[in-house]
Every structure is written in C-alpha cells, then in structure tokens.
Length: 353
Image (cartoon, rainbow, N blue to C red; front, side, top):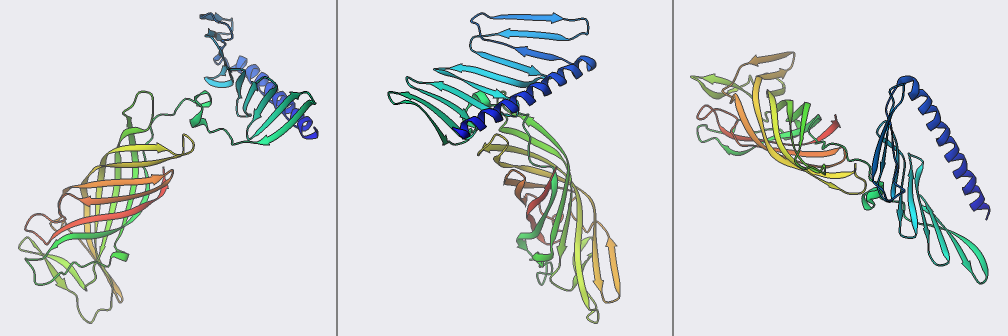
C-alpha cells in the first residue's frame, strides 16, 4: 500500500510539473505569437473549427470518434485513445499510461510496472507487478511521426587496400606487391543526399553525395614507379638506401549511387542498414613517395592511372557502426600502360555525420 501511495504522489507531482510547464510555455507563446493546435475527439461527430484571436493565434479543433490530441508547435503534448474496457494515454515525455477494467480487476500500467486492483469476496487487493516496457514499434498508438529517410554515407572512414586479378604478363616479376597492413585508405564523405522510395515509411531509399578518397598503396619491394615510353615500369631503388617507405598515393573525388534497406530491430531509430550500388571516381591527383635514411622524395605524375573509375560498393551496419567494401569495376591503370590490377578496399566508418 505504501508503494501505491508513493506512486500516486509521484504521478501527481509529475503531472503538476508538466501542467505548469505547459502553462508557462503557452504564456511565452502568446508573446511570440506561435501556433497552438488542439485536436479533440471524444464525441462521434466530425467537425473542424478555426478561431482567430486578436494576437493572430490559430486554434483548430478536430473531432473524430475515440481519440483526443493536444498539440503544441506541432508536437503531441497529450494523446489519449479509448480502447475496449479502458484507455491509453501518452503525456509528452513523462510516460505512457494504460487503464483497463475487466469484471473484477482494474489494471493500471505505468511504464514497466502494472497495478492490479482486484475486487473479490475477500475484499479489495492491490498487486503491483513488473511488465515489459512498451515498445513503440509494437503499438501504433505510441508511434511518433516517422522522420524522413536517412541513409548512411556521410562520415569519416578508414580501410585497407589491395589488388585482385593481378596480371604481370608484360613484366618479369610482380613489382607492385603490397604490404596490405600499411596500405591504408582514408575516406571523407562530406556531402549526402537522401531520396525516399516509400510514401508512408522510411526504410528504403537512394543515397548519393560527394566524398574524397585517399588511397595509399605501400610497396613490399624497394621500388618506385616511372614512365618509359608512356608505359609504367618499376624503378629499383639504390641498394645503399635504408628504405623506410615507398608507396603510391591517389586522390579521388567520389560520387555514390546506393540503394539502402533498413530493418528496425528494437526502436524505430535503432535499425540494421544494408546498401549496395556503384561509386564513380574522378582522379584529382597522384604521387609516389620514397622515405629513406636522411631524405624524402616525392614525384607527382598521373602514372597512367585512369582518370575516371567505377567500383561496386556495399555497406552493412547497425546504428553508427558501419562496415564497407569497394571492388573496382575498372582497372587501376590505363589499358596496356601498366600491370592489370583490380583495386579493392574493405573498411569501417569511424565517425558518422
């Protein structure tokens, strides 16, 4: 009984604070001349009323059958609906309540607790039990208006580069073998645009945007690249150098076109997302870099790399955790200007925008 009294006091204080906050807000609104919308539907009639006051407020009263809403600035303050033998009520962010009356039992549900008031031959008993908290995805009454479709492209990413389908038939050895652990890709996807493909839901859509992609290809051999008669050839480094690093670096402006599917898991904002599509790239620059004892050497050139490239792209993740993979649909070098190499990248999103 003490728990019940404490619960009643807590509810009274909560409702009192919320009511005072609403009154204060409405007073402030009178000064700022914002829109207040009240929807009411406790009668069986359907009607609409608009009343304009001197301070340009617009009040709208919409009546349906068994639902009542009070809205302030297009947000639900109170939402209640009659159901069989009871009612369900949602009060702002305070919580969700339910009232249900059977033959001899009245049930009042507050969040994860349920109060059962049982009338019987022995008198009235009150029983408080724990129940599962409401999941808004399982009760449309508590569903807020779904936000617009939001994809998962924008962010800061890192990955590992590699080559597949390697063909060095024009050369005597595989001179572009990579140290994959140090062949790092860095992506900065700075712009995203989303297109929803559904009218009433937000789980399927197209994603596009812009990004910058830096690819580092760290050579496992002590070589660098040079052009001989317009064809890429390996250049062996001085054996007296203590080579610490030799690599090829490329910079691309990327444009994705992805179709994304989202699967709600627990709450409407918590969902698994999967996307697939293509990414186009425009090469903005490229250079080789050699770091050896006492010196650094950089050589900026196109190295017969393709100016435009296309790649298949796939992503999967949960909330902000995201993994991606990119597989080239075009080769790294122009045809017959270098070894036949298909680049790929696998990585993870570190920061989502």
